[in-house]
Image (cartoon, rainbow, N blue to C red; front, side):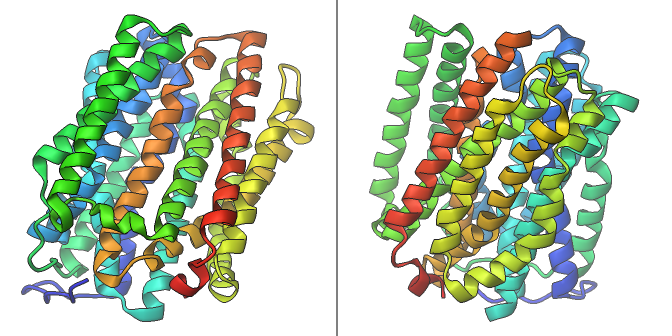
Length: 464
Protein backbone atom coordinates (compact mmCIF):
# COMPACT_ATOMS: atom_id res chain seq x y z
CA UNK A 1 0.00 0.00 0.00
CA UNK A 2 1.38 3.34 -0.97
CA UNK A 3 1.50 6.15 1.56
CA UNK A 4 -0.88 9.04 1.39
CA UNK A 5 -0.18 11.26 -1.57
CA UNK A 6 -0.75 14.40 0.44
CA UNK A 7 -3.77 16.63 0.85
CA UNK A 8 -4.55 19.25 -1.79
CA UNK A 9 -5.16 22.85 -0.80
CA UNK A 10 -8.36 23.21 1.24
CA UNK A 11 -8.28 19.62 2.48
CA UNK A 12 -7.13 19.01 6.06
CA UNK A 13 -6.27 15.34 6.33
CA UNK A 14 -7.69 13.83 9.51
CA UNK A 15 -7.66 10.04 10.08
CA UNK A 16 -10.58 10.17 12.52
CA UNK A 17 -12.83 12.04 10.10
CA UNK A 18 -11.58 9.77 7.32
CA UNK A 19 -12.83 6.81 9.34
CA UNK A 20 -16.18 8.51 9.90
CA UNK A 21 -16.56 9.34 6.20
CA UNK A 22 -15.67 5.80 5.17
CA UNK A 23 -18.11 4.30 7.67
CA UNK A 24 -20.92 6.53 6.36
CA UNK A 25 -20.15 5.71 2.72
CA UNK A 26 -19.79 1.96 3.21
CA UNK A 27 -22.87 2.03 5.44
CA UNK A 28 -24.89 2.79 2.31
CA UNK A 29 -23.92 -0.55 0.84
CA UNK A 30 -24.44 -2.54 4.03
CA UNK A 31 -27.81 -0.89 4.79
CA UNK A 32 -29.20 -1.30 1.29
CA UNK A 33 -28.21 -4.95 1.26
CA UNK A 34 -30.47 -5.71 4.23
CA UNK A 35 -33.21 -3.08 4.48
CA UNK A 36 -35.10 -4.60 1.55
CA UNK A 37 -35.87 -7.70 3.60
CA UNK A 38 -38.79 -6.04 5.40
CA UNK A 39 -39.97 -4.13 2.33
CA UNK A 40 -40.15 -7.00 -0.17
CA UNK A 41 -43.76 -8.02 0.64
CA UNK A 42 -44.93 -4.40 0.19
CA UNK A 43 -42.93 -4.00 -3.06
CA UNK A 44 -44.35 -7.27 -4.34
CA UNK A 45 -47.90 -6.14 -3.63
CA UNK A 46 -47.28 -2.66 -5.05
CA UNK A 47 -46.22 -3.99 -8.45
CA UNK A 48 -48.26 -7.23 -8.36
CA UNK A 49 -44.93 -9.00 -8.78
CA UNK A 50 -44.11 -12.71 -8.71
CA UNK A 51 -41.47 -14.68 -6.83
CA UNK A 52 -38.84 -14.22 -9.56
CA UNK A 53 -39.43 -10.47 -9.50
CA UNK A 54 -38.91 -10.38 -5.74
CA UNK A 55 -35.62 -12.21 -6.16
CA UNK A 56 -34.45 -9.72 -8.77
CA UNK A 57 -35.22 -6.75 -6.53
CA UNK A 58 -32.39 -8.13 -4.39
CA UNK A 59 -30.17 -9.58 -7.09
CA UNK A 60 -30.31 -6.63 -9.47
CA UNK A 61 -28.30 -4.86 -6.77
CA UNK A 62 -26.09 -7.75 -5.69
CA UNK A 63 -25.05 -8.79 -9.22
CA UNK A 64 -23.09 -5.66 -10.25
CA UNK A 65 -21.86 -5.23 -6.68
CA UNK A 66 -20.41 -8.75 -6.65
CA UNK A 67 -18.93 -8.62 -10.13
CA UNK A 68 -17.51 -5.09 -10.10
CA UNK A 69 -16.02 -4.79 -6.61
CA UNK A 70 -12.53 -5.69 -7.80
CA UNK A 71 -12.77 -3.31 -10.76
CA UNK A 72 -13.99 -0.58 -8.40
CA UNK A 73 -10.92 -1.06 -6.24
CA UNK A 74 -8.63 -1.09 -9.28
CA UNK A 75 -10.16 2.13 -10.58
CA UNK A 76 -9.54 3.72 -7.20
CA UNK A 77 -5.90 2.59 -7.27
CA UNK A 78 -5.53 4.08 -10.73
CA UNK A 79 -7.60 7.29 -10.66
CA UNK A 80 -7.69 8.03 -6.93
CA UNK A 81 -9.58 6.33 -4.12
CA UNK A 82 -11.14 9.49 -2.76
CA UNK A 83 -12.39 10.42 -6.24
CA UNK A 84 -13.97 7.00 -6.75
CA UNK A 85 -15.50 7.11 -3.26
CA UNK A 86 -17.14 10.44 -4.10
CA UNK A 87 -18.31 9.21 -7.53
CA UNK A 88 -19.71 5.96 -6.15
CA UNK A 89 -21.49 7.67 -3.26
CA UNK A 90 -23.03 10.24 -5.64
CA UNK A 91 -24.27 7.49 -7.98
CA UNK A 92 -25.75 5.66 -5.01
CA UNK A 93 -27.58 8.75 -3.78
CA UNK A 94 -29.02 9.66 -7.19
CA UNK A 95 -30.20 6.14 -7.96
CA UNK A 96 -31.78 5.89 -4.51
CA UNK A 97 -34.08 8.75 -5.52
CA UNK A 98 -34.92 6.91 -8.76
CA UNK A 99 -35.73 3.76 -6.76
CA UNK A 100 -38.09 5.70 -4.50
CA UNK A 101 -39.89 7.30 -7.45
CA UNK A 102 -39.88 4.24 -9.77
CA UNK A 103 -43.24 4.08 -11.60
CA UNK A 104 -42.76 0.44 -12.61
CA UNK A 105 -40.84 -2.65 -11.61
CA UNK A 106 -38.41 -2.51 -14.61
CA UNK A 107 -37.42 1.04 -13.62
CA UNK A 108 -36.89 -0.08 -10.02
CA UNK A 109 -34.72 -3.00 -11.15
CA UNK A 110 -32.62 -0.75 -13.42
CA UNK A 111 -32.10 1.73 -10.59
CA UNK A 112 -31.19 -1.09 -8.21
CA UNK A 113 -28.56 -2.29 -10.69
CA UNK A 114 -27.14 1.25 -10.87
CA UNK A 115 -27.08 1.32 -7.06
CA UNK A 116 -24.98 -1.82 -7.20
CA UNK A 117 -22.51 -0.11 -9.53
CA UNK A 118 -22.23 2.82 -7.11
CA UNK A 119 -21.69 0.45 -4.19
CA UNK A 120 -18.99 -1.41 -6.13
CA UNK A 121 -17.12 1.88 -6.50
CA UNK A 122 -17.46 3.20 -2.95
CA UNK A 123 -17.09 0.03 -0.88
CA UNK A 124 -13.54 -1.12 -1.76
CA UNK A 125 -12.24 2.44 -1.84
CA UNK A 126 -13.59 3.23 1.61
CA UNK A 127 -11.52 0.41 3.07
CA UNK A 128 -8.49 1.30 0.92
CA UNK A 129 -8.63 4.89 2.21
CA UNK A 130 -8.59 3.58 5.77
CA UNK A 131 -5.54 1.48 4.99
CA UNK A 132 -3.82 4.59 3.64
CA UNK A 133 -4.85 6.78 6.59
CA UNK A 134 -3.72 4.44 9.39
CA UNK A 135 -0.65 2.36 10.08
CA UNK A 136 0.17 -0.61 12.32
CA UNK A 137 -2.08 -1.35 15.28
CA UNK A 138 -4.21 1.75 14.66
CA UNK A 139 -5.03 0.40 11.21
CA UNK A 140 -6.31 -2.85 12.68
CA UNK A 141 -8.51 -0.98 15.15
CA UNK A 142 -9.87 1.30 12.40
CA UNK A 143 -10.69 -1.68 10.18
CA UNK A 144 -12.40 -3.36 13.14
CA UNK A 145 -14.56 -0.28 13.76
CA UNK A 146 -15.35 -0.10 10.01
CA UNK A 147 -16.40 -3.77 9.92
CA UNK A 148 -18.42 -3.58 13.15
CA UNK A 149 -20.20 -0.39 12.06
CA UNK A 150 -21.06 -1.94 8.70
CA UNK A 151 -22.39 -5.12 10.29
CA UNK A 152 -24.37 -3.12 12.83
CA UNK A 153 -25.84 -0.86 10.15
CA UNK A 154 -26.88 -3.87 8.09
CA UNK A 155 -28.46 -5.48 11.13
CA UNK A 156 -30.38 -2.43 12.37
CA UNK A 157 -31.61 -1.47 8.89
CA UNK A 158 -34.61 -3.87 8.98
CA UNK A 159 -35.90 -2.14 12.13
CA UNK A 160 -35.71 1.32 10.57
CA UNK A 161 -37.02 -0.01 7.27
CA UNK A 162 -39.93 -1.77 8.95
CA UNK A 163 -41.01 1.43 10.66
CA UNK A 164 -40.77 3.38 7.40
CA UNK A 165 -42.68 0.76 5.40
CA UNK A 166 -45.43 0.61 8.01
CA UNK A 167 -45.79 4.35 8.59
CA UNK A 168 -44.72 6.05 5.35
CA UNK A 169 -44.51 3.42 2.62
CA UNK A 170 -41.73 1.35 1.06
CA UNK A 171 -40.26 4.16 -1.13
CA UNK A 172 -39.12 5.85 2.09
CA UNK A 173 -36.46 3.19 2.67
CA UNK A 174 -34.50 4.64 -0.23
CA UNK A 175 -34.66 8.21 1.05
CA UNK A 176 -32.77 7.27 4.22
CA UNK A 177 -29.70 6.85 2.02
CA UNK A 178 -29.58 10.56 1.23
CA UNK A 179 -28.35 11.96 4.58
CA UNK A 180 -25.74 9.19 4.81
CA UNK A 181 -24.50 9.94 1.31
CA UNK A 182 -24.45 13.70 1.88
CA UNK A 183 -22.51 13.32 5.13
CA UNK A 184 -19.96 11.00 3.50
CA UNK A 185 -19.46 13.35 0.54
CA UNK A 186 -19.01 16.46 2.68
CA UNK A 187 -16.62 14.79 5.11
CA UNK A 188 -14.58 13.12 2.37
CA UNK A 189 -14.28 16.36 0.41
CA UNK A 190 -13.10 18.24 3.49
CA UNK A 191 -11.00 15.81 5.51
CA UNK A 192 -9.86 12.87 3.33
CA UNK A 193 -6.54 12.92 1.49
CA UNK A 194 -6.38 11.49 -2.00
CA UNK A 195 -4.62 8.13 -2.25
CA UNK A 196 -3.34 6.12 -5.22
CA UNK A 197 -1.42 2.94 -5.82
CA UNK A 198 1.49 3.94 -7.99
CA UNK A 199 1.69 1.98 -11.21
CA UNK A 200 -1.68 0.30 -10.66
CA UNK A 201 -2.76 -1.38 -13.86
CA UNK A 202 -5.55 -3.77 -12.98
CA UNK A 203 -8.32 -1.86 -14.74
CA UNK A 204 -9.41 -5.01 -16.58
CA UNK A 205 -12.61 -3.82 -18.27
CA UNK A 206 -13.13 -6.91 -20.49
CA UNK A 207 -12.57 -9.15 -17.46
CA UNK A 208 -15.13 -7.21 -15.45
CA UNK A 209 -17.65 -7.50 -18.30
CA UNK A 210 -17.11 -11.26 -18.61
CA UNK A 211 -17.38 -11.73 -14.82
CA UNK A 212 -20.64 -9.75 -14.73
CA UNK A 213 -22.11 -11.69 -17.64
CA UNK A 214 -21.05 -15.01 -16.11
CA UNK A 215 -22.56 -14.22 -12.72
CA UNK A 216 -25.67 -12.89 -14.44
CA UNK A 217 -26.15 -16.08 -16.44
CA UNK A 218 -25.65 -18.29 -13.42
CA UNK A 219 -27.96 -16.17 -11.27
CA UNK A 220 -30.68 -16.04 -13.93
CA UNK A 221 -30.57 -19.81 -14.46
CA UNK A 222 -30.70 -20.57 -10.74
CA UNK A 223 -33.56 -18.08 -10.30
CA UNK A 224 -35.58 -19.79 -13.05
CA UNK A 225 -34.89 -23.21 -11.57
CA UNK A 226 -35.76 -22.24 -8.00
CA UNK A 227 -38.98 -20.51 -9.03
CA UNK A 228 -40.27 -23.34 -11.26
CA UNK A 229 -38.66 -26.22 -9.33
CA UNK A 230 -37.47 -27.79 -12.60
CA UNK A 231 -34.56 -27.43 -14.98
CA UNK A 232 -36.12 -26.08 -18.16
CA UNK A 233 -34.19 -25.37 -21.33
CA UNK A 234 -33.77 -21.68 -20.48
CA UNK A 235 -32.43 -22.44 -17.01
CA UNK A 236 -29.95 -25.04 -18.30
CA UNK A 237 -28.68 -22.76 -21.07
CA UNK A 238 -28.31 -19.80 -18.70
CA UNK A 239 -26.40 -21.83 -16.12
CA UNK A 240 -24.18 -23.40 -18.79
CA UNK A 241 -23.43 -19.98 -20.27
CA UNK A 242 -22.64 -18.60 -16.82
CA UNK A 243 -20.25 -21.44 -16.05
CA UNK A 244 -18.57 -21.12 -19.47
CA UNK A 245 -18.08 -17.37 -19.02
CA UNK A 246 -16.73 -18.01 -15.52
CA UNK A 247 -14.17 -20.43 -16.97
CA UNK A 248 -13.21 -17.87 -19.62
CA UNK A 249 -12.75 -15.24 -16.90
CA UNK A 250 -10.44 -17.53 -14.91
CA UNK A 251 -8.43 -18.36 -18.04
CA UNK A 252 -8.10 -14.65 -18.88
CA UNK A 253 -7.04 -13.82 -15.31
CA UNK A 254 -4.42 -16.56 -15.48
CA UNK A 255 -3.09 -15.12 -18.73
CA UNK A 256 -2.81 -11.64 -17.21
CA UNK A 257 -0.73 -12.92 -14.28
CA UNK A 258 0.10 -10.16 -11.79
CA UNK A 259 -1.83 -7.65 -13.93
CA UNK A 260 -5.09 -9.49 -13.29
CA UNK A 261 -7.88 -8.00 -11.19
CA UNK A 262 -7.31 -10.92 -8.85
CA UNK A 263 -3.93 -12.65 -9.34
CA UNK A 264 -4.63 -16.37 -9.08
CA UNK A 265 -1.27 -16.93 -7.40
CA UNK A 266 -2.83 -15.61 -4.19
CA UNK A 267 -4.88 -18.80 -3.99
CA UNK A 268 -1.69 -20.78 -3.49
CA UNK A 269 -1.95 -19.39 0.04
CA UNK A 270 -4.03 -22.04 1.83
CA UNK A 271 -5.24 -19.61 4.49
CA UNK A 272 -6.39 -17.03 1.95
CA UNK A 273 -8.30 -19.69 0.00
CA UNK A 274 -9.84 -21.04 3.18
CA UNK A 275 -10.92 -17.62 4.42
CA UNK A 276 -12.72 -16.90 1.17
CA UNK A 277 -14.39 -20.30 1.08
CA UNK A 278 -15.52 -19.73 4.68
CA UNK A 279 -16.80 -16.28 3.70
CA UNK A 280 -18.80 -17.70 0.78
CA UNK A 281 -20.47 -20.33 2.96
CA UNK A 282 -21.11 -18.12 6.00
CA UNK A 283 -22.36 -15.01 4.23
CA UNK A 284 -24.37 -16.99 1.69
CA UNK A 285 -26.22 -18.82 4.45
CA UNK A 286 -26.59 -15.71 6.61
CA UNK A 287 -27.80 -13.64 3.63
CA UNK A 288 -30.50 -16.21 2.90
CA UNK A 289 -31.61 -16.13 6.54
CA UNK A 290 -31.71 -12.34 6.66
CA UNK A 291 -33.93 -12.30 3.57
CA UNK A 292 -36.23 -15.11 4.65
CA UNK A 293 -36.86 -14.40 8.33
CA UNK A 294 -38.53 -10.95 7.98
CA UNK A 295 -40.27 -12.01 4.76
CA UNK A 296 -41.81 -15.10 6.40
CA UNK A 297 -42.77 -13.24 9.58
CA UNK A 298 -44.56 -10.53 7.60
CA UNK A 299 -46.13 -12.68 4.88
CA UNK A 300 -47.37 -15.63 6.93
CA UNK A 301 -46.52 -14.94 10.57
CA UNK A 302 -48.86 -12.00 11.13
CA UNK A 303 -46.06 -9.52 11.88
CA UNK A 304 -46.17 -5.91 10.73
CA UNK A 305 -43.01 -4.58 9.03
CA UNK A 306 -41.96 -2.72 12.19
CA UNK A 307 -42.56 -5.83 14.31
CA UNK A 308 -40.40 -7.85 11.94
CA UNK A 309 -37.69 -5.21 12.24
CA UNK A 310 -37.91 -5.30 16.03
CA UNK A 311 -37.65 -9.08 15.91
CA UNK A 312 -34.17 -8.69 14.38
CA UNK A 313 -32.99 -6.25 17.08
CA UNK A 314 -30.63 -8.64 18.94
CA UNK A 315 -28.39 -8.67 15.85
CA UNK A 316 -27.39 -4.98 15.82
CA UNK A 317 -27.22 -4.79 19.62
CA UNK A 318 -24.75 -7.65 19.93
CA UNK A 319 -22.74 -7.03 16.77
CA UNK A 320 -22.14 -3.34 17.37
CA UNK A 321 -21.40 -3.69 21.09
CA UNK A 322 -19.24 -6.82 21.10
CA UNK A 323 -17.53 -7.04 17.69
CA UNK A 324 -14.60 -4.74 18.71
CA UNK A 325 -14.08 -6.90 21.81
CA UNK A 326 -14.07 -10.03 19.69
CA UNK A 327 -11.54 -8.43 17.37
CA UNK A 328 -9.18 -7.79 20.27
CA UNK A 329 -9.70 -11.29 21.68
CA UNK A 330 -8.97 -12.87 18.30
CA UNK A 331 -5.78 -10.81 18.07
CA UNK A 332 -4.58 -12.37 21.34
CA UNK A 333 -5.78 -15.95 20.84
CA UNK A 334 -5.51 -16.18 17.08
CA UNK A 335 -8.53 -16.06 14.75
CA UNK A 336 -8.82 -19.79 14.02
CA UNK A 337 -10.79 -20.55 17.21
CA UNK A 338 -13.48 -17.86 16.79
CA UNK A 339 -13.74 -18.61 13.07
CA UNK A 340 -14.39 -22.25 13.93
CA UNK A 341 -16.85 -21.56 16.75
CA UNK A 342 -18.75 -18.60 15.24
CA UNK A 343 -20.21 -20.34 12.15
CA UNK A 344 -21.09 -23.41 14.25
CA UNK A 345 -23.07 -21.20 16.63
CA UNK A 346 -24.81 -19.54 13.65
CA UNK A 347 -25.71 -23.02 12.40
CA UNK A 348 -27.26 -23.86 15.78
CA UNK A 349 -29.34 -20.69 15.61
CA UNK A 350 -30.57 -21.59 12.14
CA UNK A 351 -31.64 -25.02 13.35
CA UNK A 352 -33.80 -23.26 15.95
CA UNK A 353 -35.82 -21.93 12.98
CA UNK A 354 -37.49 -25.35 12.92
CA UNK A 355 -39.41 -24.18 16.04
CA UNK A 356 -40.92 -21.21 14.18
CA UNK A 357 -44.39 -21.85 12.79
CA UNK A 358 -47.63 -20.03 12.00
CA UNK A 359 -48.75 -19.79 15.62
CA UNK A 360 -45.34 -19.47 17.24
CA UNK A 361 -44.91 -16.52 19.60
CA UNK A 362 -41.80 -14.36 19.53
CA UNK A 363 -40.03 -14.99 22.85
CA UNK A 364 -40.04 -18.81 22.99
CA UNK A 365 -39.55 -19.36 19.24
CA UNK A 366 -38.24 -16.45 17.17
CA UNK A 367 -36.06 -14.72 19.78
CA UNK A 368 -33.82 -17.75 20.57
CA UNK A 369 -33.16 -18.23 16.85
CA UNK A 370 -32.16 -14.57 16.34
CA UNK A 371 -30.15 -14.42 19.57
CA UNK A 372 -28.03 -17.51 18.84
CA UNK A 373 -27.40 -16.41 15.24
CA UNK A 374 -26.37 -12.96 16.52
CA UNK A 375 -23.92 -14.47 19.00
CA UNK A 376 -22.35 -16.60 16.26
CA UNK A 377 -21.96 -13.73 13.82
CA UNK A 378 -20.55 -11.50 16.56
CA UNK A 379 -17.88 -14.11 17.24
CA UNK A 380 -16.95 -14.43 13.55
CA UNK A 381 -17.28 -11.05 11.81
CA UNK A 382 -14.37 -9.01 13.19
CA UNK A 383 -11.82 -11.87 13.19
CA UNK A 384 -12.78 -12.75 9.61
CA UNK A 385 -12.22 -9.21 8.33
CA UNK A 386 -8.88 -8.77 10.09
CA UNK A 387 -7.72 -12.26 9.07
CA UNK A 388 -8.31 -11.60 5.39
CA UNK A 389 -6.14 -8.47 5.62
CA UNK A 390 -3.47 -10.37 7.55
CA UNK A 391 -3.35 -13.42 5.27
CA UNK A 392 -1.63 -11.63 2.35
CA UNK A 393 1.38 -9.42 1.80
CA UNK A 394 1.00 -5.67 2.34
CA UNK A 395 0.83 -4.81 -1.36
CA UNK A 396 -2.17 -7.12 -1.82
CA UNK A 397 -4.24 -5.96 1.18
CA UNK A 398 -6.67 -3.74 -0.75
CA UNK A 399 -7.14 -6.35 -3.47
CA UNK A 400 -7.69 -9.13 -0.94
CA UNK A 401 -10.27 -7.14 1.01
CA UNK A 402 -12.11 -6.24 -2.19
CA UNK A 403 -12.16 -9.85 -3.34
CA UNK A 404 -13.40 -11.03 0.05
CA UNK A 405 -16.23 -8.50 -0.07
CA UNK A 406 -17.09 -9.73 -3.58
CA UNK A 407 -17.14 -13.32 -2.33
CA UNK A 408 -19.50 -12.37 0.51
CA UNK A 409 -21.90 -10.64 -1.89
CA UNK A 410 -21.69 -13.49 -4.37
CA UNK A 411 -22.69 -15.88 -1.61
CA UNK A 412 -25.76 -13.76 -0.92
CA UNK A 413 -26.46 -13.49 -4.65
CA UNK A 414 -26.43 -17.26 -5.19
CA UNK A 415 -28.43 -17.88 -2.01
CA UNK A 416 -31.14 -15.42 -3.07
CA UNK A 417 -31.31 -17.00 -6.51
CA UNK A 418 -32.07 -20.36 -4.87
CA UNK A 419 -35.00 -19.13 -2.77
CA UNK A 420 -37.64 -18.78 -5.46
CA UNK A 421 -39.74 -21.77 -4.43
CA UNK A 422 -39.84 -20.54 -0.83
CA UNK A 423 -40.75 -16.96 -1.77
CA UNK A 424 -43.52 -18.19 -4.07
CA UNK A 425 -45.23 -20.13 -1.25
CA UNK A 426 -47.83 -18.93 1.23
CA UNK A 427 -49.21 -19.97 4.61
CA UNK A 428 -48.09 -23.34 5.97
CA UNK A 429 -46.29 -24.12 2.71
CA UNK A 430 -44.15 -21.03 3.21
CA UNK A 431 -43.14 -22.20 6.68
CA UNK A 432 -42.33 -25.65 5.30
CA UNK A 433 -40.05 -24.14 2.67
CA UNK A 434 -38.58 -21.80 5.28
CA UNK A 435 -37.66 -24.75 7.51
CA UNK A 436 -35.98 -26.58 4.62
CA UNK A 437 -34.06 -23.47 3.57
CA UNK A 438 -32.88 -22.74 7.11
CA UNK A 439 -31.79 -26.36 7.56
CA UNK A 440 -29.76 -26.10 4.34
CA UNK A 441 -28.29 -22.80 5.59
CA UNK A 442 -27.31 -24.48 8.87
CA UNK A 443 -25.48 -27.23 6.97
CA UNK A 444 -23.68 -24.54 4.97
CA UNK A 445 -22.59 -22.75 8.15
CA UNK A 446 -21.35 -26.04 9.55
CA UNK A 447 -19.28 -26.40 6.36
CA UNK A 448 -17.83 -22.94 7.04
CA UNK A 449 -16.81 -24.10 10.51
CA UNK A 450 -15.18 -27.20 9.02
CA UNK A 451 -13.21 -25.00 6.63
CA UNK A 452 -11.85 -23.00 9.57
CA UNK A 453 -10.79 -26.16 11.35
CA UNK A 454 -9.08 -27.77 8.36
CA UNK A 455 -7.67 -24.92 6.26
CA UNK A 456 -6.71 -22.15 8.69
CA UNK A 457 -4.07 -23.96 10.72
CA UNK A 458 -1.38 -21.42 9.74
CA UNK A 459 -3.59 -18.36 10.28
CA UNK A 460 -2.38 -17.34 13.74
CA UNK A 461 1.15 -16.85 12.53
CA UNK A 462 0.10 -14.99 9.39
CA UNK A 463 -2.51 -12.74 11.00
CA UNK A 464 -0.50 -11.88 14.06
